[in-house]
Image: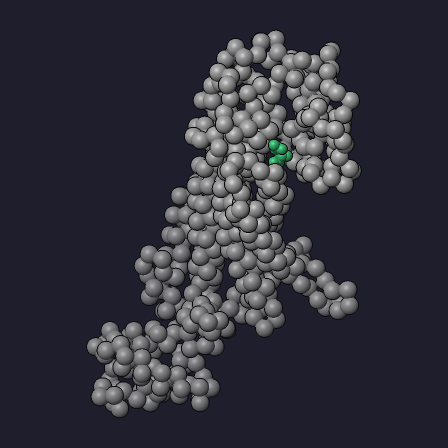
Length: 474
Ligand code: ARG
């Protein structure tokens, strides 16, 4: 084995007269976080070597040696036996050095027609493509959980709120399917983002391309990229795909955070709409009675760090001239943390959502508290010929009447409703008020009446759930 590396460890060492201080080494190194890319780095190197051999740039025997060496390195890494060295700066140089140790000159030929600049851009894309596929799978599991609980509660009445004031009756199933819609849009965004991740930068080399007769289409094919990137300068400097991913993740976490906020509110004693399984909650070290919704609270909190990573990456890129700059090394930690936060959150939420325990009686009682069917009454008067503004005014009077009587609209008799609406004062006959009109004031009547696409009618909720299952193959 011929190992011609100079005594100094660095790959570029001959140019330099003095060694780096330990602090500068640590400051510039990325190996302790980018070693996470090792598997993808090897995958990219094997495709590059295969292409080089096919193009006659390296010998078939070199390719064979590289393949053997890489397979050993992969097992060493998987077994936790690989020695990562700070002196070797990053994942790329660590693996290349080990390869050369194992197979000699063939290892030193691997970097022909390539730079760490196009290499790292390729690694991150391979990594992110893998993670985006995983996240799409997890989103589907969460959506499925929401649909399952929605179906179970397709006719469970709860107050629908605007301004956090009781507005109109809805079903809990309908409410949950609103979140299924949000997460389905997130799925679309991930899918769309994947298209721009899935391009091969390898071949751009340092920035200007290479003098070797490379076949970028072949490397793209080997790595299952849709196509090579089109401009070498852009290839090594572009991190749009990472920013897009963090943007899609931020929107996703915003949805998680809104759901969390509702779960927290619903679980408080003031609402008591739901309970969450104990395994997603914790107690208090001082108050023995406490059961706190820690998981949703943490998810709401972790949303902040994902937004932060988006801002971090945008700021990282904003001042960079073409092409590659070392600034780019700072792209990895925010990206990794975004992936980890999203993956963990989705995994936990899918299970937690399935475990929501619904307190249907409390939801119903709360719906009866806020005159939730007042709009139904106004609509019914309109159907009897009254212009909507007059109907609105009459019902507002009825609500004030109920306020003084301390009762709900649905509790009024025909005579009381006539007295409450005071239709004659507005120039209409009291005959408009009969038993049939009283019937529209029930919660079930209100739900049933909203029977159209996107409405809260229990049948529509079941249909929406079935359509979502069909669309997503769930
Ligand atoms: N560790 C580097 C990064 O993450 C790899 C590319 C280094 N390229 C260079 N010319 N120093 O960006």
